[in-house]
Length: 104
Length: 334
Image (cartoon, rainbow over all chains, first blue to last red; front, side):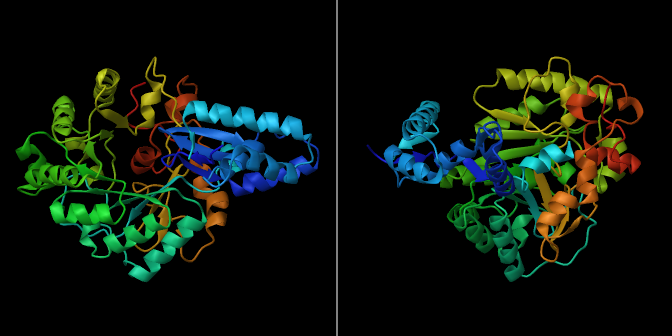
């Protein structure tokens, strides 16, 4: 499997303060699934990715395969590996279908 | 509203950056012709680029004054683009020959905008108070096309062109322009002094936008953009902007030649200086920015059903004519 690469034309950034607040909320056991931490500007439209989505997106820099991303995420989150792998795969498949990622 | 913005955004998406107020033109509507502030040396400008990179501001757009007046524009742009910023500029085109176009491309510019206000050369030259301005601006568009640098066209809508904007769009098509900005007229600087002569009535603005939006919807080969929040009060308007109301102070900020920050180029209220103040504190705590992000319906806006979409229209125009951010936009037709 080839590494995953973000489309270069997409402007994005990690909203660091929001990310730090979200990590704190996660520590407290709160549901952070709906909290955006990364913004993408695509064709004049803004999209938000949540903490997990943002971490996957940030890693799609052309140096990691999907499997490598799953392994890195597994080291950061105390979650079932099968569930994590399914979630990452589903997310990446969606971004590939949107044309926001390619297999570089 | 303020919390919503600063809860997510840690910085604006765009800095509109005036390196110099100096200009080789003397236009009838210029907001900055009478502005005089010291300019920064190149070393300080590069420090500002570093700050913008650190704050993850993705876009900078050089305006003016005429950006090409400063010899270090290419150096600054090259440094900014190498550091990952998306760099663009607006120019009157007088100094933009083929060699300059190539240098702009080599410096990493993503696009260059040309200000053209009429498809009639004599009318444009008269508006810009510069004989030959139209010819050189159009030649600049061609030079950009020749070197493969994306061009845009900016046209300030006023009495000289609101009935002939289709010809402006056709001019853009003929010269390879991909996007045209039909800017709303701002009552700042000379624009304020000359507004009776140049500005439209609210009903004329309404008719213009209805017509221009229909043209935009039918235009498949040219992107047409507006920057007027008052549009949102039109019945059936269904575009979904990143934010409601003015984008100034929310998605964009303005940098003056001495590093002072204002909400936008048309609101001469300094919120701080990017070189001497803590940017995060300004962004999150500036009373001026908070006020702009938290407009309250005043005057005829109070009770108006459109307020939640237009947020009172253009804050710069309200401020220029009343001194109050919250007063209704004088262009409002409701």
